[in-house]
Image (cartoon, rainbow, N blue to C red; front, side, top):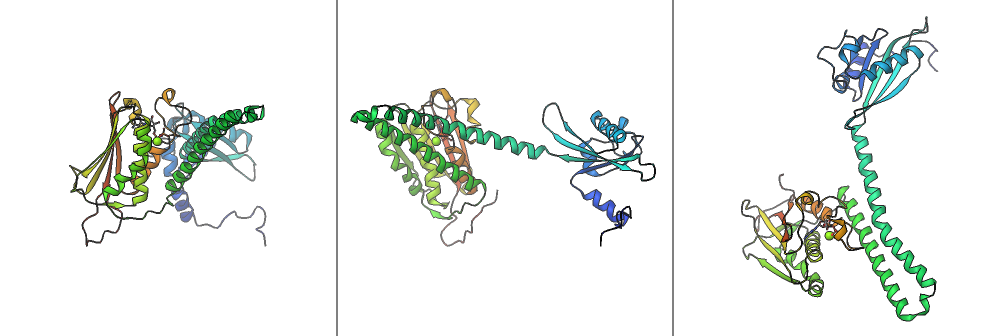
Length: 368
Ligand SMILES: Nc1ncnc2c1ncn2[C@@H]1O[C@H](COP(=O)(O)OP(=O)(O)O)[C@@H](O)[C@H]1O
Ligand SMILES: [Mg+2]
């Protein structure tokens, strides 16, 4: 049943073998014991920045990265496989090089070396994103957990017997738990959106419905002595999208506006047909709050990003709201942007596809 030991390794026709090597995603480089290049497939040529016609050239004159020569030398002298990372000093590219000796069965010395090059740049980048993500989540959870721990210890240490104090502590525990619950809900929402499993109910939705989603926050605005106003152009077309999810976007923006505006200020939610693109509806949430520094403008839509951490009050927001808003808007084929003059306020602009007329069948995704 098994192939006789030492028998022909393969009966793959040479042409097929060549095609196979040419079409590999990994780089394949074959050199002889004099470091002369016998073969280099296209990925190997790209990864090692080889000249046009590398076959026949010596590695020393064609491979810029001397570490490949060292790897081949090690492999030739030891007669065993070896591995080496070829990262550049700026950590931009990560290439894993594996050298395998091709041993002459008669002399049992290595006559050729096969170098396999794997570009791990993308994998590494994803690893970094994941590591940052875990670090961020743990950081955000640590504050409420520490607060709860302290409150519980104080309660157990005697405060339980003082009714008023106990009541206050327990309600603070409730607030912290609510904050963590909110964060967990946002994380689940974000991962659902990012994995593309989110289902949208696309239908013609009146903008007044979206604007009215902010109304639920009026008690909060009142409490902070903020004016909440609406300016809806009555000729604004319906939006084509998921009313519930878009309502959440508006609510998120208004909630932010409330958080970052000093008492006495105002928040305006407006809607109209976009001026420079009649197929789009423009929703704007403008506030007269602290605004956002130019350096932060670009980043506020990133997951967990919070501008000016020092000014942030404990337990207020996880930095996920705008990331969710951007995903939701983009899933509709829309765009979200922000403008701000620090100290004067911020203005978040959401562009969403307009519903194109009663009677026309609009099936969903728009171009772009
Ligand atoms: N209206 C606003 N005015 C000033 N800064 C804002 C406003 N909206 C958002 N930001 C900034 O963007 C950051 C990210 O917002 P968001 O993703 O909603 O997270 P969170 O509200 O949980 O902090 C906020 O922490 C804040 O620094
Ligand atoms: Mg927010």
